[in-house]
Amino acid sequence: MTEFTVIAEGLAFPEGPVVLPDGTLLVVEIGRGVITHIDSRGRRALAAPGGGPNGAALGPDGRLYVCNNGGFTWHTESGVRRPVAKAPDNTGGRIERIDLETGKVEVLYDRCAGRALSAPNDIVFDQHGGFWFTDHGHRRDRQLEFGSVYYARVDGGHIAEMAFPLIGPNGIGLSPDGRTLYVAETSSGRLWSYPVLSPGVIGKAAWPSPTGGDLVCGLPGFHRYDSLAVEAEGNIVIASLRIGGLDVVSPSGALVQRIETPDPYTTNICFGGADLKTTFVTLSSSGRVVSMPWDRPGLRLAHQA
Image 1 (spheres, rainbow, N blue to C red):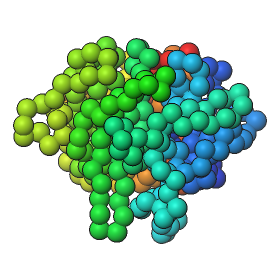
Image 2 (cartoon, rainbow, N blue to C red):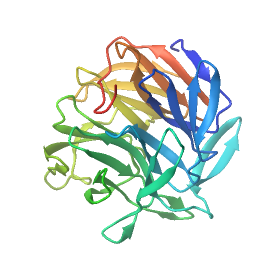
Image 3 (cartoon, rainbow, N blue to C red):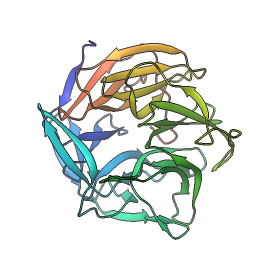
Image 4 (cartoon, rainbow, N blue to C red):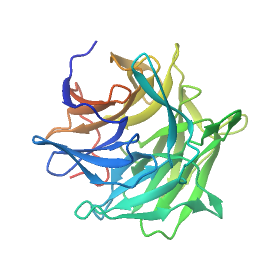
């Protein structure tokens, strides 16, 4: 079990960590519908979009872009709190833009080609003024929605579905050269890759790939993949549910490192610190955000200071 430092606790299913230019941290609290700022003085709610804010990233304009799944129902057993299905009062999936100075929330996208977004989950910006995001889909009763991968621009004028169908697409990230898009699929425990042909356009693997992606890895054991981050040299770090921890895999799919954590809902990771060799990890079911030193530097994100 890797040693770590608890940065904050008592949170309502934190995810989506973002390191701000001043080195402080933002997380979403899915269970409270808020964006929370964490610094040396403690924590405070910065914005309250409601629903189920999930993955988040800083955009080129310095504002926070948030995937909102609309809201879950929850189940607690043996001290583990976890989301289980679409809430009856779900407010609808959307991409939101939040002014960090005022806390103002605006909906940037809630549909694509006339079709409502279901449960946007995670997001990554490229260097061209756009972003990729996953739509996880929802489960309700005996029905399961397929998920998708989308590309959109920050001006609100373009959104396109680029990959479908996936079963619970979750984490998403770009390789250091921006030429490969990685997508982690929760239900299958698979990591897929897509070549980026031009800004907002990906290539597809030949049939019979079920997702249009090439399989990077599907490790032995009961892995259910959540969010991911990319190291500066190209390894992919995937947060693992059920057997809580972090799997570090090479672009060819080899397991580089396995880091155990004490929470079966280890969900998100981001890099920070002056040399990007500090990681911030959300241990969601226990309501904690922790930090730990990292052996290798993380990849500096498109609009990370």
